[in-house]
Length: 196
Image (cartoon, rainbow, N blue to C red; front, side, top):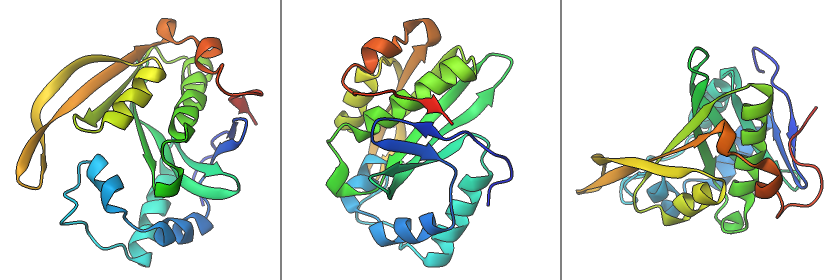
């Protein structure tokens, strides 16, 4: 399905892997949970309906992305994680992650996926900087990024319109020399981010 091969990144109980055709079915079955969509900056009263064809196109697009992984946990598709806006000259990228199963939120799975990808990005890709942007009311995501080592660098005021309200985007960043994978990964047992 993918145009180029990306490495499988392994954590204690998680895989970051290439997208597969079956991922579209699992994504479709999870639907668009209103609380999750709101954390992405989508108006929960105006969530677009998922279609099987639309989800297949979305998965196909991610499969073609040079730095996008499906997140698999306990044998099931959980979400996606990407390095967007890769700039080889400046050795930087922007991280994006989406977890779609509401029953698996708050269990540290997003943090584990981010730490696995950060180790790969800083070690194997030799990136210098990774940034992330998150809507200001998404306290869970902001806490997760902080736990991974990101620091708030600023805000884009009223950058997102959610329903009838303008919301700020929080801009966070992490530099390679700030990332201490041994400390950051201490919560997780086993070897994290083995590249297969």
